[in-house]
Length: 480
Picture (cartoon, rainbow, N blue to C red):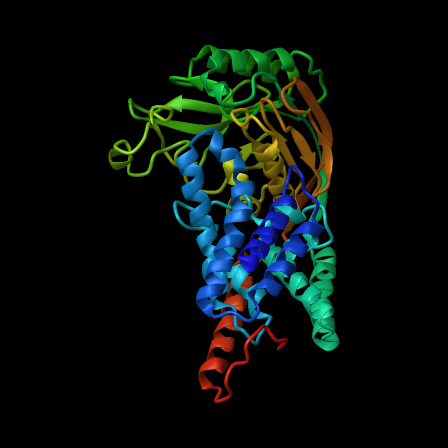
């Protein structure tokens, strides 16, 4: 029971490194405690301790979910924890470097499965303000997870006075962090005057019951405060809710706004698509008032924008809050406008690096994140979402601008620094002249697979050594 409690403490430390509490050293401390806890146990016991660690991390990291469904919150936390149970089980008892490799593969797996993955609550989100963050430019958030785990190993090695092995671990960590700082991040290629509008309003679960017209009117009232000159006006996700966009009063109003400001207007639109489906889109109006570009959200929110296996799930719970399914879009998130090629990630998509890569590879020179986090009562999801936007900025070398109807609305530099950020709930106008960029980073060109492949090779090598070795395995974790 003592070791289980220690494993739980390790998970809580990692959770405490995440927004909104977020102090990055706690993530490394949690990794170190877990490494030390796994020592001297067989794979079954390690799996149990890894699962306890994961439960503690996600019970806190996914705390927001309980507002919507307590059973779902518990099941989801257990599911996410199972990846860490599997990771702990495959850690080699004599090769500490298998610990970072196992955690990298666990994070890669849970970021893709099931239902496209759930990156919220991940350790990388707690490192955006720390010295490991620039490494995302090299290998994305998987590399950051690996470095957090490696830093935990280094702490344990130092505590055990294994100086040489500790020096190697520290050297790898420092090299990766410095490599991220010096890695190519693209080049500046002009500027753009952007205004992101936050209409303000009700926060919490009852926000979903708000009349869509109220959200539109709040945005419209806030926009009345905006004065030229500007190049792009950004509205949040789904603040335009219509049966059909063409010819709607909302489209006419936004067309007039674009003409009046002499700017490209980008707004989130929810549009009916038959009786059982809808589209979650981002639409751009040119300064002439004409609609010139559209992107339909590709990565939908399971149980939020669609119900998987709806016919089956309806027998086990109330799904009335999601009466229709969003039809997925396709292709890169890119808007070709008079203001230039604008990369787009809609809300939940900001947690998935592939959406940022696709927009950047399609020559988006800035990333826009129209989102709607108003249904979350606390700052946990808005905080994690902003952390994800900072990671995407670092990974792609692109300035990122986020707009939300009740916050956070923010501007993030290509280095991941928050230049401007609104408060939650109230009306806000965030104006900034942002730097447009071109070119790519190693993470944009290569994606996460080199890091995942390296982790797989390290684990495979350790497994092969163990199978071929005639020397009995000593109990306890020993430095390699």
